[in-house]
Image (cartoon, rainbow, N blue to C red; front, side):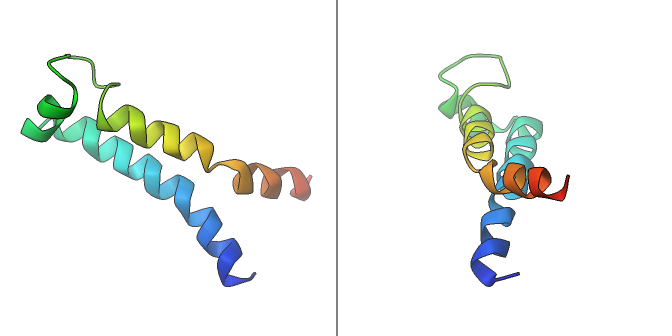
Length: 67
């Protein structure tokens, strides 16, 4: 596996972990970013989930080639 391939596979899990961390933290920065909303799926959490979804293509290609 080339380093670029490994790097492309690292993005999705990294963003997913960051989404979990920002949803679990519930600190003052999440209040500022969410503009007063009580939902954990707003602000930084939603951004990290979207980034994980957008970077999922290398994982999907890898899974489809294994079958």
